[in-house]
Image 1: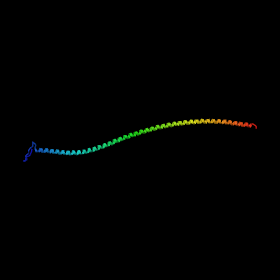
Image 2 (image 1 turned 90 degrees about the vertical axis):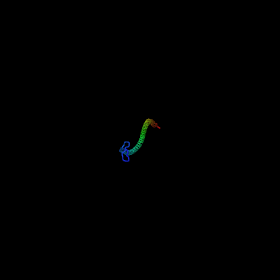
Image 3 (image 1 turned 180 degrees about the vertical axis):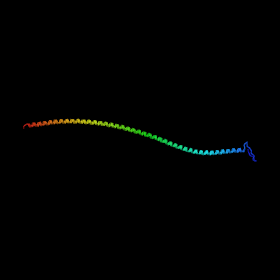
Image 4 (image 1 turned 30 degrees about the vertical axis):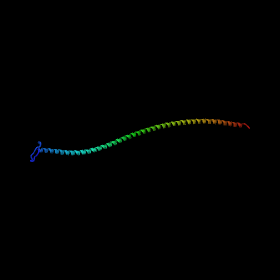
Length: 163
């Protein structure tokens, strides 16, 4: 409906101007509501974008921390392997030193046994030589006594002869 100059209500394709006004008001309200909703959604989107940025920063931080943790875990593994190698080397050195000390001890025992045996043989030889020397001294004493007695007998015999 359309109005003419005389304020007569005219219809436009069977619609009254009040209906069109109401319809337009509804559309305006809906558009205004949509604009408000859109502004509200934009604020929410902005807030969520900030949250996303913060979460992305935290994710980046976590990735950095995870990389550091992985690096420290690798270092720990390396240190553990180094400690194990040092322990193994220490055990090998201890074992070698223990074996060497056993060898030295066995050599010392053999040398001591040899020295004792040599000393016993020398002592036995010295004892035999000493015994032989005693016998020779006794023999010498008997012979000397015999010679001296023979000499004394000769002196006695000389005294018996008259000159």
